[in-house]
Image (cartoon, rainbow, N blue to C red; front, side, top):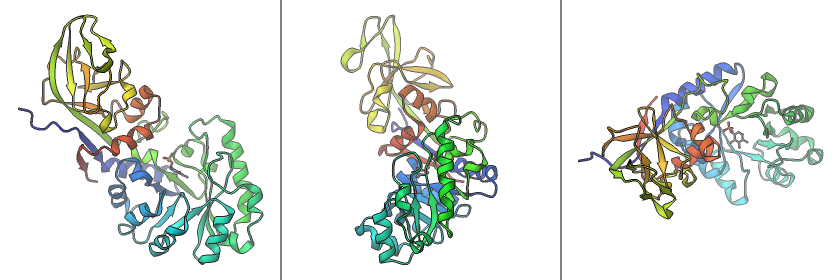
Length: 355
Ligand SMILES: *Cc1c(COP(=O)(O)O)cnc(C)c1O
């Protein structure tokens, strides 16, 4: 009898701590803030915050309610709200001493009229997402500018170190700094570490590298994966030549084969686009290619490389060998989206390795 059939999601908090400490020593003298929005990209915001509470004093979330959730774990930390603020969030922001990141003239004028608390300002330098445009900065009064305790921008192409937009954004950012006499400055997220020290400014805001998502070779040996996933074999079967597999009968066995049915599907966050030959699972580092379409709760794979596989065994879906970044290449997305989706899976047995 199988002991358990539910898929397993493992979070290695020792890796979170290791990655944070590595980046802190790499960017020596620079404040390393942690982005824990979207439940820390699926890793678990509360777990990340309690792991780093003695090391890190600055956190970024998207919404006030996410900030309220972590506040009791880090009573003295600076918690920034990236999406800014609506009138309904004002009391929650004030009560929890959260700091809104403001991106419009109207929001800065409103905030400075309702409270004396400081704020962070996002300025637009090239991403064309959120941020005050240069001509709008000139409309801020001196006292409004003095209340900005942090001035930020966000790079569009930091993953491509040779991209000309990086330098353009840095120059635009530098040229505006003198307007904010009381502010600290922050331009880069994880991939800014690859661009050189001038991009690090006073503070770097890290998410991806903290959670083991790393597209570059530079940190390959230093950044450890945080999320791993295993799924149970529910059944193994002979697949005679000519038989089809899964919905739509998109795969036909070219020869006699063996298949295994795995307890993981798109309902758990596995991208359905990995079916039909693109993705695979692993058994002792041997690849088990996915056969046919991925179903909601299960997926079929070819066990030619794993003839000893039997029901109740757990195969690897994500591990240090086939990482979220590797899976992302097979899907055509980025590792961020892989872990954020799996992190929302409700049906995993969650195992936490404490730091
Ligand atoms: C999410 C986010 C970050 C963190 O980005 P990573 O690439 O995950 O390090 C930093 N700054 C802003 C404004 C963000 O939205």
